[in-house]
Length: 136
Image (cartoon, rainbow, N blue to C red; front, side, top):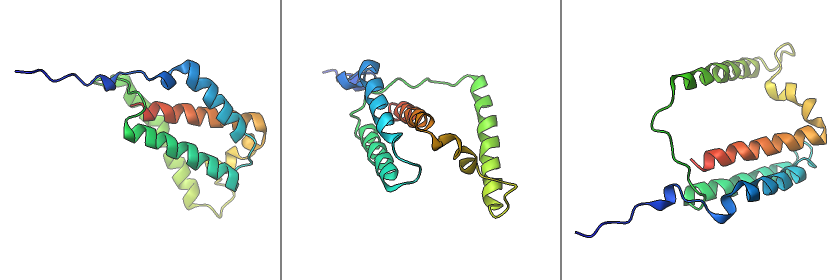
């Protein structure tokens, strides 16, 4: 009986998928993204273009895959507590938007993200986080 080849693409590392390549690429994209003020058409176009490209790479299987753990440790559940608290806070603020006593998280982050460097760092963090999700 002939044996089928194993799916080596699950853990295959592509030439472009190494940190020595991806970190400078993400740094360049973040440096360009930091030039755009928040919620401008240029910033939205960049986010949609890069996000769409990463989504395509993930769905098409062109990005190398990392092995998924068979079971998460029990301590992983604790990550849900701050995420749930943040989501509920954002929902509460969104429902009470006309009231300035309950600003949304995005309104609170606007003064921080006005500068070039924090905006570029936020772009870099977004790119890195999304790339981790694409590779799963």
